[in-house]
Image (cartoon, rainbow over all chains, first blue to last red; front, side, top):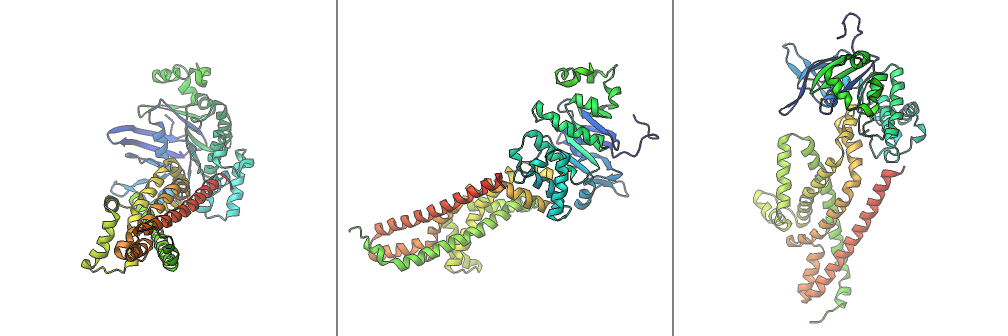
Length: 269
Length: 221
């Protein structure tokens, strides 16, 4: 896949990751390096395990086996001297996870707080900044996503696209090194996806390390530096968009893309 | 026997005191019950499995038996295990234990009404469990739990009548005593009904005001 000699240290390094829900194994031994400063898109059919994989990288799901290193530090579990897998302390988990920001399909803004309140909350409670300082920083983030005029609006008063931009600002406020996006535009009207994708494009241009689970094949092809294609819980393909989408194409991917012809993937055919 | 309205006027001071006792026991027990109910729901959600099981037994037993019998056992049965209580404390504690079980179910539903994603967002941003409960769960569920809380408060207000069986000098006890003394049961019960209805209306009005306030808080600054 990528030769170790030329690649910089990966931002996230996943080895042998498996995840089982009861009897069902949804991820089978995944190995993947997320390169720093690049955009990696995880694509694949529904039920392929891509969202679960992403949630493992945010430690919202605990992998059944395998390790995840975030900038070299173990996330959630580590090996002790005897090679046993041990769970790290909640404090340690929070520290490592703080390098990772997450955006959800359903935005998950807190409905009882304004946009500004949502973005400044963790700055106040987690970073212990004063209210004034937290709100100043939150305002700067809202400005970045073009929503400083909506700072005093509650989520219910914002469009879906605006809510997702506030959610992105909320994650960025803590200055994560890596941003994870779980289908960030899947619950948006087509005309609202553009504004969210534009924010993500400018984030990518600023050099943010991003992992994006998306059905936006067009976005994946045009913005991503790496494409990882999952199918039935296995990493089937991993490479540059040219390698993955170019012809000759993997038969399973071809079949998958066929279902996307009218969703922005026509340009690839 | 005739319906004698004058009886009501002559008993003013006694009735006023009895109303005071009813309100005091009700408010005191409600407050304790809400706090108890919250911690029971909290313990069941976040505590170890054994605690959840134990608290579940509490909720099931209290909800599954009549308050009259619970109170009777507490007051008259307590001394067998060395628990001797005066009528008012017994009534207050009994009512609080009874209400706590119901309030815990209200809070449990409240906790469950908050979408998992809202909690996950907090987890990802590094909030700890206490901060998530204080800053996200409690404020988000407030609007939802207000109506059932007010409803349960009204139920508890009327349940204070049961305290008369352990001689708490509240409205039912006093008015029934007067009824027996004067041999005027119908007047006494009519009066009693009016008192409770008046108090419940008052409670309902305050409750609606609180609900309106909390739901407004959600949408404006």
